[in-house]
Image (cartoon, rainbow, N blue to C red; front, side, top):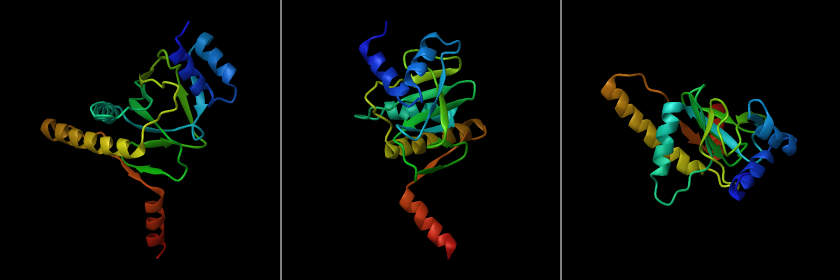
Length: 179
């Protein structure tokens, strides 16, 4: 059977399901071993293009004293998802950026193995620790700069960029737009 950390991570993830027991059953015995969980309650997911996401995760892993949160790759869709604290007022802006908050659903394999094209790059540990938006934004900016350098050297097309816009900045932008 699984060790206690895997069980704790599985319980934490399954808690986001409508029926946690059915979720765990599907992970254990289901044909695909992947379930669809609601975001917005325990976590939101910022999904970015694969190349940008892998460089961003590399940047986070090289950051001293930073423990990255759960990070999920979908190699069929060429995307990387970063699990963040739920924030209904938050907006992320950028090319190829997708934000799954309340009302969205995310396909996830169990924390202890891959499911088809889905693979945990940083599996959840069950503690509930997530990426911090500020650290993720900084890492995304650094990764974007690295990609721009690669693109300028190789003459390739840029993959994407992103920007986190705190809710208070959005309100200020809305007020300016209304004038």
